[in-house]
Image (cartoon, rainbow, N blue to C red; front, side, top):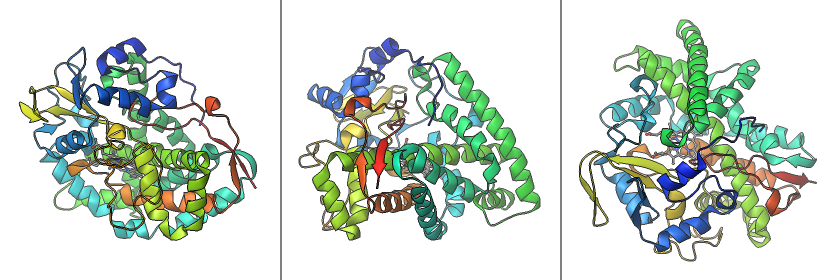
Length: 409
Ligand code: HEM
C-alpha cells in the first residue's frame, strides 16, 4: 500500500506523553521488547503528562469491563475530542453506544457473515491465482480481500473502490488519539471524512429509494423504522465499518503470515492440522495483534489495581502487551499454534477488545483470516525479505506492514 504522507509525527512529544516512542523503528520492529521493559517497571504507570499506561492483562480487562471507564470527553486536557456528529459508537458510552450498537448488530448478523464464506473462498482463490513468483502479500491478498468484502457488503460499486483507499488511509491514522497527531494529519483526516460522508450520503439516498440486498440498505432500513439511526449516525457507522474493514484484517493476514514464515516448525504444524485453523488464527491474533492498544477515560474517580485514577484521566490500555502477560499465558513470547488446540483453554487474548465494545466485526475478520491463511499456505511460500527490510506503517493503534515480500510457487 503506497503511503505518500510525510513522516510528520511529533515523536518527542509522543514519547513524553506515552513513556515510550511509538515511532522509533526499533519499537516497530519489536514493540513487545519495549512492553516488557514497561511491565518490569509496574502494572500501571503514570507518564510525565499524567497519562496512565497499563501493560497488565488483569488491569486492561478490568478497565474494559468497568463502566466507570469510558469515552466521555473530560480527559485531563489531552483529548481534543472529535465533534459529536463525527463520532461512531466505537467512542460512545451507554446509553448511546447501546442503542447504536444494537441497531447496527441487526444488520451485521453472524448469519449474514456466514453467508459470505463461499465468496471469501472464491476471492482468496482468485487473488492467489493471480499472484505467483515474487509478490507483495499485502498488495496481492491481505489488503484487497477485506476491502472487496466490506465494499461488497456495503454495496459500494467496484469502480469506486479506489476512492475508498485514499479516504481509508487518512481515516486510519485518525484512529490514533488526536493528541499524538500533527495538525496537518488531523486536517487530512477531517477532509477525508467529509468527502466520504458526501459520497455515502448520495449512495444512502439511492438505497433508500431502491433498496438492495446489501448492508447499506439494511442500515438505511433500520434508520427508517422505529428506533432510528439518524443520517449522521448512519454516516459515522459507515466510516467505522469502512476503516475497520480496510485497516485491521489486512494486518491479521500480514502479521499472521509473517509470524508463520518466521517459525517454520509452527508453519509445518499449521499445514499438518488444517482442522486446527481456527485455534491457530486465535494464537496469531494473540501473538502479533493488528490493534495494539485502546484508551479509556475515567468517568469518575475510580480505582484500578489499587491505584486511584482521578476523574477525567486517560488510561492507555496496551492490549498488545496484555496478550503477552506471563501471569496469564505460559511462555508468552512463544508462538504456539497448539496453545488452544485441544479446546481446554479458551483463547483469552484481548486483540478484539473486551466488554461492551468487543469487536463487532470479529466473526468477519476471523472468517477472512482463516480462509486467507489456510489457502495461502496450501501453496509453497517463502519469505523474500530480510528482517531489517520490513517496514511498518506509521500508526500507534494499528500494527501492520507496509509490504511483505514473499515468493509463491
Ligand atoms: C483482525 C481484524 C480486527 C481486529 C483486530 C479488530 C479489533 C477491534 C478492537 C480491539 C475493538 C475494540 C476497540 C475498543 O474497545 O476501543 C474493535 C471494535 C470494533 N470493530 Fe473491530 N477489529 C477487526 C476487524 C473488524 C472488521 C472487519 C469490522 C467490520 C467491518 C470491525 C468492526 C468493529 C466495530 C463496529 C467495532 C466497535 C464496537 C463497539 O464499539 O461496540 N472490526 N475492533
